[in-house]
Length: 266
Length: 266
DNA sequence: CGAAGGGTTGAGCCCCTTCAATCTTAGTGG
DNA sequence: CCACTAAGATTGAAGGGGCTCAACCCTTCG
Image (cartoon, rainbow over all chains, first blue to last red; front, side, top):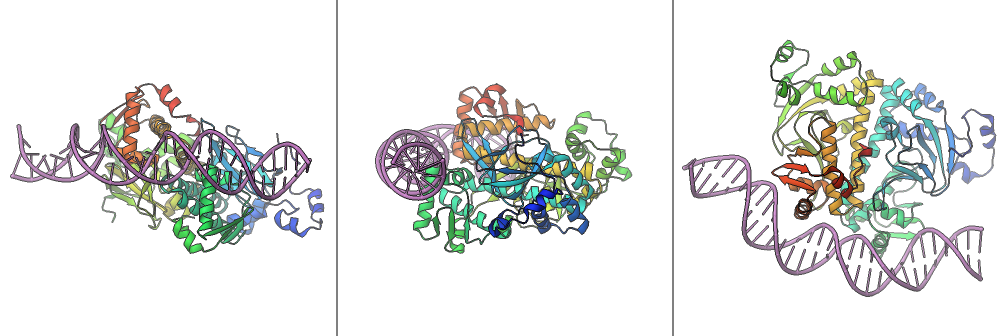
C-alpha cells in the first residue's frame, strides 16, 4: 500500500541526498526529510521547549511521495497514520450519492492531514494530492502518545491545529450557504492569500495555486463553468488578475469588501 | 453578567439532593446541577478512571439559565468560558455581511459549546439558546488544565468531542454545497434523529425538536419558505410526519435513502 | 502531430429566492 | 373564558442565479 520509499529520519542515505546541488529543489522540497516544517507550524500557535522540539523531530516516520491526483487516504481507511505535509498541496474531499464532489479543505506545507481522523479513530473523507507532494506518515499511536506526554505544549498545539482546521470548515459552511457566487469566490481567494501569507509561503496579493478551476469550484460549491464566469467577471472588474495558475489581487481591500472577508476567524 | 447561583460540585448540599425520588427527572434533568451529564458524554468516547470522573465533577462552575433566543456568547467575546450544556438546546451561528444567518451546529445536553474557541483563544461565532437552557460555565483555564493533567483520558475525550463537532460541520458543508433541498433536508432530519438516539435522548424515528422552521432553514442553507415546501413535500410523500415541533420518520430506511444519509461519519 | 486535460463561451431551463398575503397556533391580558 | 396579539407556518406568483448541455479553444505533453 505504501508504495514509496521508506526512510527513517536517521538513515545515512537521507543525509547523502542533502548534497544535491539544486537550490530550487532545496527550497521547495528539502532533500533532507525532516519534521522541521511541522515544528515551525506548531510553534506558531504554542511555545515549545527544546525538549518538545526534539521529541517531535524524533518521531518515527515514513516519507511518501505523491503525484498529482493520487489518493493519500480514502474514506473508510483505518486511521493508522497522520499525514504531515512536508511539501506540496493536498485537499480533503467527500463524495455524495449522486457522485458530486465537495472539497472540505485545502492544505499545504506544515499542515497535518487526518489529525482529527486519527484522534477520532476513523477516516471520514478522502485526501488527495493536488500536486507533487511529500508527506511524512506518523502512526496514530505515536501522535497520541507525544500529545499525551507533552500535554501543555505539543498536545495543545496539535489540538489547536486540528481545531483551526475545523474553524475554517465552519467558515466554508457560511460561505457556501449564505453568499452568492461572486462573494463566495472573492472570499475564497482572500482566504487562500491570507493563509499563504500567514504561513510564510506567499504574498497574500500574489500567489500561485496548483488548483484547477474545477478544484476551486468544488471548494466553492459551484460548477466549474459558473466558477469560470465568476472569475472572469472579477477579472473584468479589475479586482484580480489570472494567468496560468497565478492569482494577483489588484486591491486587497476591494476584494475583501466584495468577498465579505474578515481575517478574524483564522 | 453571570446572574446565576454558584456551586461547587463537592458541597454537601449536592449529595443530599441526589436522593430525590423521581427516576425520570434524574435521567433527563437531574435536580442537582452537576457535570454528571458531561462525564457521561465524555465516557462514551473514551474510558475514564474514577479519578478522572472525580476531577471533572470537581470542576468549579457557574450555572447560567437561559431563555429561548438568548445569547450565550457573541462573536468577538473573549473566550473566557467553555459552556457545558446541562439541559436544553443551543446553536452556533454566523452572520454574513448582508445580514443572512447561517447555523453552524446544533447542540444539546452534554455538549460543550465553545470548547474549540477556548482552546483557540477567541470566539468566532455566536451561540444562542433555542429553548430554556441550563449551561455550566467553566473557565477556559480550568478546561485546559484538566486536559493537560489527564491527557490520555480527559484530554483525549475533550479533544475528540471538539473534533466530532468539527466533523459534523464538514458533513454540513457537503450537505449544503452538493445536495438539492429535498436531499438536504432529509439528511438533516436523519442526522438529528441519529444523534439524539446516540445520546439517549430520543428515538431516531420519533423526536421533538425545539427548532422553528426558520432555524431548520438556517441549518440547511435554505429560505424558510422553501424549507416549508420541502417539508410539506416529504410529508405528502409519506416519508415523515410533522405535528407541532415533533417529527416522526415513517420509514428510516426510505428517508435515509432520500437523504443520502450514512451514519458513518458520526 | 495528435491527444488529453483544462479553460472559455453560449443558450435554455429549473430550483430556489423574493415578495406578498393568509392562516394557524400559542401566549396574554381583560 | 374570550378577544387580542404576535410568532410561526403555509401558499401563490414571479423572477433570477446558477446549473445543464454543448460546443470550441488553448496549452501541455508524449
